[in-house]
Image 1 (tube, rainbow, N blue to C red):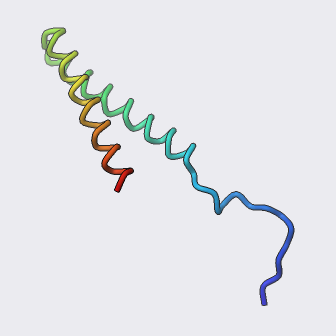
Image 2: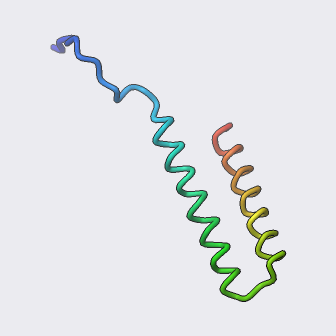
Length: 69
């Protein structure tokens, strides 16, 4: 038999803040890693900027379709 107790627990609530923090951290780390890797290859500044923009757009679209499904 289960008893009801008056304490409220937060385990039933969605972890939107945790998901947002981990998602932002993942995006920052992966984009920074790409930029550092391209910069280490002595690419031109325009190529580094283009790669960073492409990575950010791809990650954004991926997150959009990943959370919308």
